[in-house]
Length: 71
Image 1 (tube, rainbow, N blue to C red):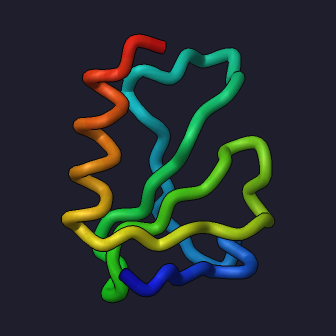
Image 2: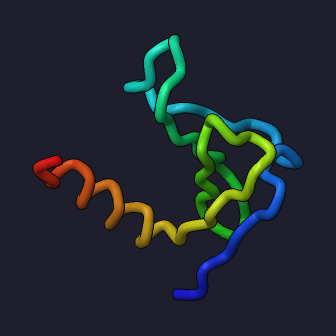
């Protein structure tokens, strides 16, 4: 897989936080649906920072791994 990044993720509109994120902020990730290169993911605390772009298969594998981890 070729890793892609978006250097300044604030240039894109439509970011959403997980429904599990509380209103007080904290450690959250945001995703952007409908991007042609895949699924961009960024740190909600750094909205002007970079975003990683995952393929659909890569994102699915990540979600499965998080759901089954013991952390």
